[in-house]
Image (cartoon, rainbow, N blue to C red):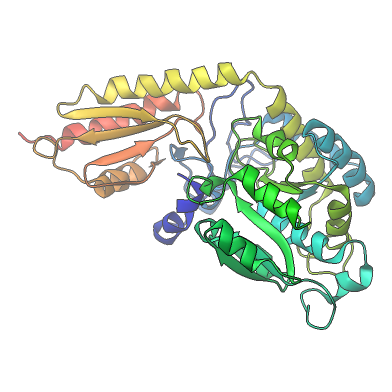
Length: 408
């Protein structure tokens, strides 16, 4: 599922708990739900778990953390440290890995958007930090320019600072919109194909007017190169989720870019409490866990991982295509959640079932399976978030339901 379609999913999805992850070069932690005393907490609370054939969806608990990440979290939970020191030193290493001047671990990409803009508005002026989100009479700027095609619900993060968003479509409209109140020019990478102004031109136009730029690439790894691509391109701030492809803590993200803006953003986040970001707390365990996840992701054999996804996707296709009237097609999104997606379609004259009915039967079955969206006679899935061997279970269950629906 593309991030830009997420809200549609959330509006119709049932409440779910606990997600199952996928096979990578080093496996994610096993999703047992067991506590220290061997308790199955999912079972104890009656919370449904499922095979995740849909992707890194926040409502579905994102992704599963790797064992190395969990080890980092557990290991760092046993001693105290100063949060600022951890952010200083780990942020410096993250910045080095991602070709940025500075970086900080945030409580997800949404908070990175708010904090990044806050850092631009206030710099390191504590008086201004204390005044947010009340901008009137402070001398601070108050407008963010965004392409209309890049306006999504998550942009509410900017409104939290007290700013308003000004929409444009063309270069001419952008030039006319720039004024003494313009604080930031925002770019949404997952909708890069929908706007009239591309990455490089956006940065160039911003530089002409000395306006900072921020890009949201929350769900845009893989490819791994995106972690430094936009820093190298010249964006002043870059935001990314930590709990998707990188398999860090689901409540963590990264804000990186120009040091002066990161320094300003740090004043609007914990451990300080005189700011709009006090509730965006990141604990030391998440900071260390996010770093380990990033380091592991960068150093993975991405060619091997991709080949594994392709092979497992093909194995599902081979099984379901044995059902009379069923065909499959593999696509890869150009932007956001760039992984192989298997589209499964059927001849409605031969197979009497709708995509919604198939999804519900898989969801209510044992084991429960969450599929990708679909309509009419087609549905899609991805092996990205499956544990090794789960693709066989999914293929078998899809085939069973489709066979049941065959016209006699």
